[in-house]
Length: 299
Image (cartoon, rainbow, N blue to C red; front, top):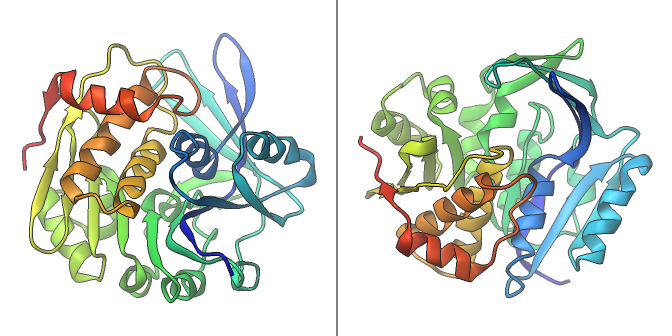
């Protein structure tokens, strides 16, 4: 059975974005942004496992036409997010109008990869059983954001992750921003939060701090990753997913934590300068790393 270098597992969503000026429907979700970004690097063997309704299969057809290998778990519904923005873009009301089926061990039996990135959007997308199962086959990477979002009566509530201490034992890479790390650990200090997450079992803890850069802890060293200044901020949607794409691409290729983090940060900068998924090249990412103004985090 074929073993891929990198596999992303996650729902492709249908997003309804309402602003005072217009209403737009577009695909989204970690797996959507990750797959479109990773396909820019044809030297990696990548596969996507997603779950969505038959009505959204056109998004999968488009990815396959772009030579992305996609495996689809049938689901009665797709995840349907509604984001309503006021005049102030920081003021967002979010609802989940439909949920897709969670991923099952049974469906993932046949998938083989060195690294599995789980793009969780909601708390019940991946059970601890699924994490444990995949960790027996390869390194598991998780973006913590979805585990901290629960849907009750279509409304999204911020929650802690009840099974985190059991799940984190099986997670090699974990990404959290400064808010998520505090919810998970109770610590607002980056070093203390990273030490706690490592103590719970994570091998590489990635704390992203937006325009302040990011910090990666592997049990020995706090690696400081700069943020690269964008020429303009157009669309931040999918920046965290793009960061993880760059990081895991480099780690899968044997690059150091420092090099992988800088590559990931530069990818995020290029992503924020345009709407939609990352569309740059490896050369443009390397160019960004050498020529842009940098800001290192202070911890």
